[in-house]
Image 1 (tube, one colour):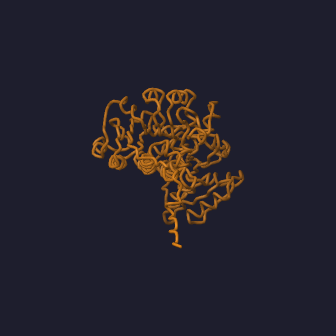
Image 2 (cartoon, rainbow, N blue to C red):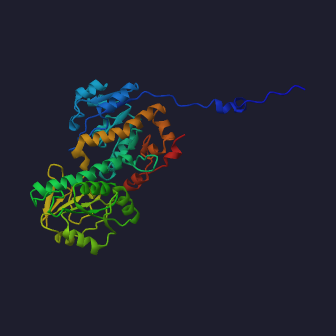
Length: 398
């Protein structure tokens, strides 16, 4: 009897599996308009990022002057392969729109139906009409701040928070030395001179990078947070033993009376908690500085009021308050490079995956960024905040 030849692994694979269709690469046409939001100077893609996209066969149409605020010239973008135009309508007619700030209602009118919009959302500054206009055009919209990476963190938020943390200390240093309410102190550890005392409220990413920067300049640093695990994590990352405490009024008040700078960096679900009362501020040293980085969520100081980059400070009870939201836009080139480094791989992967439809099936973190899918609200926070019907995006994707 002749021996039967064994089946190969290839022969045992079901035909249906072998006929599985894989998404084909898609060439993207991306529009980058000039930002028109007040004092917004950042841009999503740097010339190097545009060059990378062009090398992969994608087209980028940019409005002239879009990179000026970040010190990137039209010539740099043109040499990188971008097509420049003064026609805003042409830019917004692209199937994919990239912006930093969310589009205005007038800009939404220019966007083509069923386009893909990638920008920040800044949910607390929107209104119901914004979502209704996007919805009427069946637009699929992704928010920077909602996109997650493989570790479950928010890369865009973390990156901008790093900038805010470093900037908080650098700006405070300027205010101590040369502000209108200045004390004439140098933010450094000079031999024989007592160092500056810094209190940081919040042990998240902003708090961590504020602590790193303050320590690097020679300051005494105290960190307050109600999460022991966050405080321990900050100690480990900074690599130095710091004074840490939970947010107990007795200890916080004592630290505030002695400090020269206090950085407020607490988050919250709907609003940052107010942990520093007006009385605590009144007991602070004359000429000390408050940096309320949480101001875009309401602020964590009772005395805080929103200021602007043009008029960034005010003095109350002898204490200088800096309460500017969107601090990273002050350092527009650094922030633009940081954002570009994050989103260029996402865009390239989106194209390789065959477009946004396939990309969100394959990338759960990218899917988290969607707040509108073909005009249907898919983000629970948006639905609850603006009383809009909301659907689970997983039920809409086939």
